[in-house]
Length: 160
Ligand code: THU
Image 1 (cartoon, protein in one colour):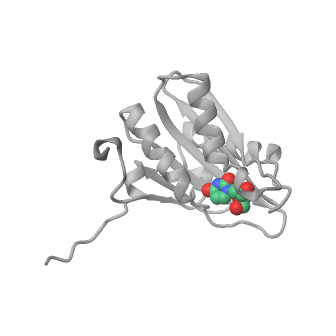
Image 2 (cartoon, rainbow, N blue to C red):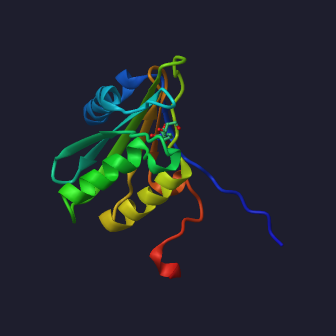
C-alpha cells in the first residue's frame, strides 16, 4: 500500500482588482446577475457568468422552487443556457459569486458537487481546462485552472 496525496492548485487574489481585465469583467457580470436570482427560500442569491471561445458571455443565477430539489444552482443554469444557445462552442471560464440577504458573504463560494460534475462534462466537451473564478459579495478571489483542481478522480464517459 502507498499513501498518495491530491494537490489542489489555485490562485488566490486579495480582491477583484488584482485580476486581469477579462476575469474582472466576468466577475463583475456575475455580481450583476445576483440581482436576477430567484432565491425566495434561502435568500442566498448566486450569480454566474460564462465566457465562451466565440467571445460570447452568458450570465445566469439560481432559481429556487417551493419543491426545493426542483430549483437549480446558478452555475448549472448558466452553463446549460450557454450550451443551449451556443452548442459546440468551448467554454473558457466561469465566474461565480453570491450575495446573501442574511449576512455579508466575504469569502469565495465554491460550486456544489453537482455543479462540479456538470463542469467536468463542459470541460470534456470544450477540450480545454475550464477556469473557475469564485468570490463572495466582497473579499478574496480564488481561481482554479481546470475542474480537477476542485474535484479529484472525476467520473467521465470513458467509464461507461
Ligand atoms: N447555490 C448555487 O446557486 N450555487 C452553488 O454553488 C451553491 C448553492 C444556490 C442553491 C440555492 O438556491 C441556494 O444557493 C442555497 O443553497
